[in-house]
Length: 79
Image 1 (cartoon, rainbow, N blue to C red):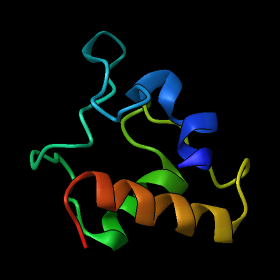
Image 2 (image 1 turned 120 degrees about the vertical axis):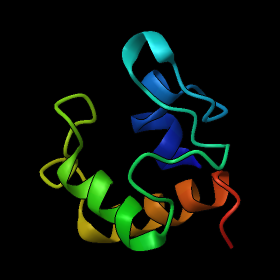
Image 3 (image 1 turned 180 degrees about the vertical axis):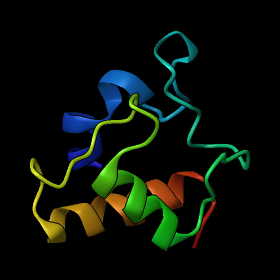
């Protein structure tokens, strides 16, 4: 949650509901353009998407990316 608050909330909002003006999708619903499974979320966080979502591979270490992935997966209802 802390990692999300410090790195992702600026675009996706503190509750993960997104900001359409920035192109940041809602992470709490079941509508996921690229998929909501762990592997896809981790790829998105690592490599970014569509020139809007930044790649975090140079900013966060692999363990932190994995922790963030699990948190975001949970926001979308994943278990």
